[in-house]
Structures are given as C-alpha cells and as structure tokens.
Image 1 (cartoon, helix red, strand yellow):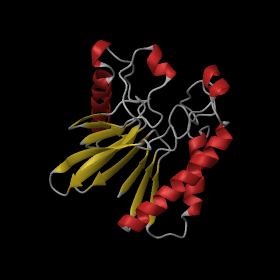
Image 2 (cartoon, helix red, strand yellow):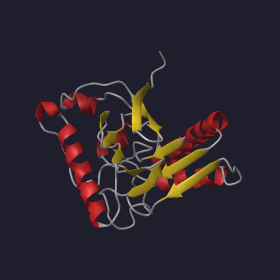
Image 3 (cartoon, helix red, strand yellow):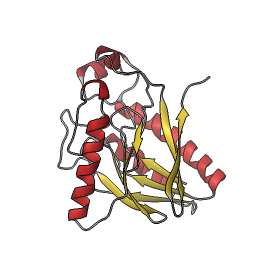
Image 4 (cartoon, helix red, strand yellow):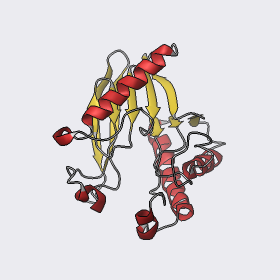
Length: 220
C-alpha cells in the first residue's frame, strides 16, 4: 500500500484566530500527530506487508512562518519534524520505505501509471467559483502541473492533492477530503458541508485507478 503524506498534518498557528482557538500548540500537535501516524503506519505494515510512504513534508497550515514561503519551506515546516520522527521510528523496519522531496512534489509510479503528489497550495490555481466550488480551480491547477511536468520531460497520469478541504476526483486528479470536517470558517462562507474523510484509491496493474472509497472519520 502507498501511504501519501500530503501536508497539513496539523492546524498550525498561521492565523490569529487559529492561534487563539487551537487546542494545542504546533509543537504539542506535532507530537500527537507523530504518535497517531506511527501507530497507523505500523498497522498498515501488519495488514499489507509493505508500506511505501510518499512524503511532501509540509502543506500551508503546518508551516512555522506567518506567510507562505518559497525558500526553505520544508525547513520551516512542523510537518518535516513529524516526518523525521516517523523515519527514525521505522528505520529498522524493512517493510516500510520513505520517498521524500525537497520540492512541493513527489513523483512516483503505481504499476505503469505515474502519479504526482503535492499538497495543493502550489498548483498555480486557487479559490472557488460560485456554485461549482473549488472543482474548477482543482482541475485547472492539476492541468497546469501536468503541463509543467511535461515541459520537464515527465509524464504525469494523475495529480493527487489535498488542501481544498473538498473530496473530488476525475481521471487525472484526486483531491482528498478534509479530516477536521465542517467548521465555523466553512460556515462563514456557506461552503457545502461534507463529513471528515480521507480517500482510499485502488489501482489495477493495467487499468489504473478503478475504485475510490471515502473513509468516513466519525465514531458512528
């Protein structure tokens, strides 16, 4: 199984409101995230026998700077600390491998299909458009990423991302759901509610993505 670490592991203190209302500091949240992820990765290894961790080591919420940065973005990310602790925890476990990146992107194959994993805040497209929500900007950004990579000589069959807090998929893009679920911020902008969820994607050796299942993260 491929475990995609796409960033935004913690809420972070990037806005004054979050700094006031977060239950934990970024340091405390990073420790909790590490323990939870380590337990989950170990269970995946027990179930599947092999786990490939694809890790972009940061999004926009887990940054340690007030404004997003292009230079040293990973070095200033609390998620990179979580990543380092996970690598250390599993350094002797041959079932678990890590692929890391110093850029916002991770490029890897699943069978014969090439996937590019990125957080989503650096796809060259942002915002939403009326009733269609973020779908248009997600597709537009994914196409920009695919064209950029083609100019670099790399073929991308699908872009996987998060960031937009909205589950969405097409044949060339998968946008993950949002673990926190609906919030006061989403209510303020009358965004369409969806339950907290993460995607589980199934790939066939010849046909590529053949199924996508949302894992609903509620106690009931």
